[in-house]
Image (cartoon, rainbow, N blue to C red):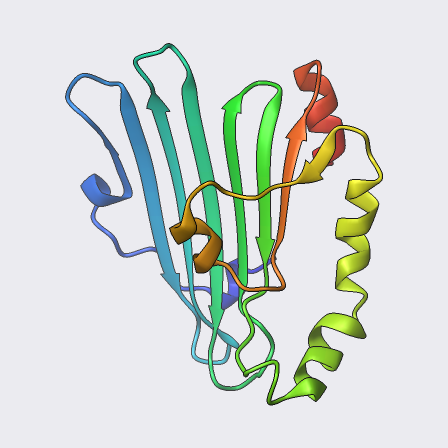
Length: 165
């Protein structure tokens, strides 16, 4: 849907896709600026796959969209962190662009009136989903207070895909 509002990625191929010499890690990075007429300033997408020496694989996919000054709407961040076929952390954040304490109307317009939190509450009704609290202070501080951080643990991978749809 956003394709027509974005310019092509201009990163060199070796920056867009790369892997370490022994093949235990690979990653992809795409940065696309918004068209002049678009409210999107730029979009960053990344994917990292790492085989950890314990035999576990870690996959992290992240997409962030940053809007320009033509709108006050929040920016957008979604991150998926998967450490096994049956376990996933989902982070959805709409980082605010105004101080929420000083601008309660902004909080009302973009977060409360949109019933944004109802989606998180619906997810939490499923027995496989729990709130996620990162053990990393950096991760906890990098996301806004409005972020939904969920840990999904299922018995089989098909159920994980079903939940995400």
